Image (tube, rainbow, N blue to C red; front, side):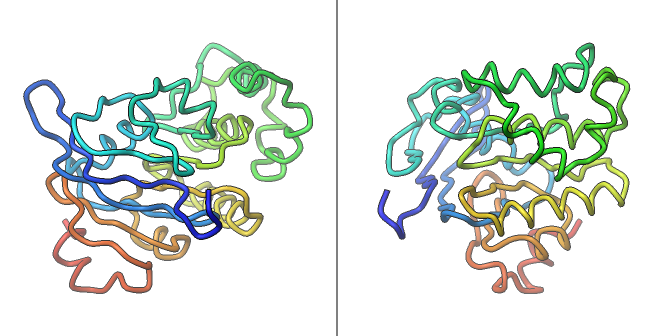
Length: 237
């Protein structure tokens, strides 16, 4: 990848679920070492876009390139090995496994141990160290979200994909997740693709944005260009 080329490039992506077109031409780029916010009202195609990037939703037309390499025909596990880490909406931790077991699964996915990285995730989310023996299903929603993000980080992704990480979470944990994203951005070596409804969260953390409406990108650019007219037209409910 050239120094100034995008880490992720999504071009003309179209996808269907059953007989319905859910993506009608998605175009955006995620720069290295940046936070990119994918925005829009409910049901416009944000999660479907993430699923197409991770390989969970087949792409009918268009291309997805990661570090310059086409990946839209690869299986999800192949994309993960290239450096895509995904925290889906709903978190999808293993509720009957302990916090420690949930974290160690990341080592299986990575094909090596994670001991050298555990201290880093405990620094980001200290509560996880306290709850290592506790089953994941017994954590609060916010603690489960922290666990899901930590597990994804332990795979050492080049692109961390987060689908609405603040949904249904208490404000103090939203702040902790925001602090973690800001720290990861400052550290460099990773980009973050964030789907989020919480406008202030995006404006505080994001470098760039794209807005989706009816399965198409209708606006994008640097976060400082997200003006009141765009917010009123495409984001307010």
